[in-house]
Length: 393
Image (tube, rainbow, N blue to C red; front, side, top):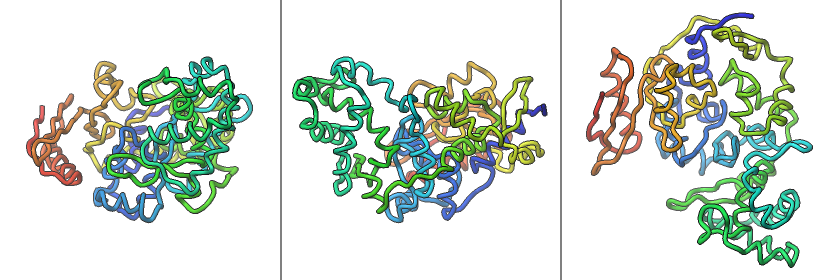
């Protein structure tokens, strides 16, 4: 098996995440379609898009998402909100639908509610699907209202002896705001999203809105027999070399579902090694991966939840386990100072008056420090603020 070096992998992944060059606003669909752009916490996709196409302003992004509707936001990978081109909806939605006894992504946490109700989750999902069609001509503002409204719509369809339990305070999160029924709906919205029954609409102030795929795009979500294969190819193209465990972890699915999807394209893969460990690449990517590393964009200030940072083998990005803990936290990941594909430091920003203060902490010497100052000023401008100060450590 061919042996790779870490710089070859970094260069390969930067290129396929479209961080190797500066792209244009007309490339937004291609950029979002590489592997989807997760949007949690809300707004991180904007920073990710900006880092690939700096000429894209917030108004340009809103136009693509809300005006032209070339991009779509829906619950997707790992059950979290993601943006992707509308034509790739089957890849980032319907390909996630399980087969046979494979469990749905994200729904394992609802076991407590099922035990309380003494009901089957599949039965409740089918009941929810019956009322979801009302979103075809309705838009609901806020996630709390969506859960509550759908739970109310389901209530008359439930067995009479379950309705009182359905309306009891939730055993999750905020029992003062959510019922058991609302909690069940919240979990099952992910399977509904994968079926095209619910997507995000245009934000209303600070609140998200929700409607159906049909209502938002003007068409039903169509099945595509190639979508499952394309999902695996997208993963390997952006995160290869990798293995099935990395794919399962990235997708947030069961091992059984992940292995089924992975095996669909196994004939298109070949093994390679890194530091003696075996992993796989797409055979079509071999020439690109084994070409000499190239880092034309040496320094990038990535947002804390950029798709490039969503690599399962974190040692490729930063080999020091202690420093890894500073990059990937349980909450509120900082931004990453990426130098030639390696995370060489972290950065954070905060508003101060009418401006933005940025703090950077570097772990290795970067010769072009002036470039960091320029990138910080440009990012503040993208967020429509002035750079009030920068602390470079």
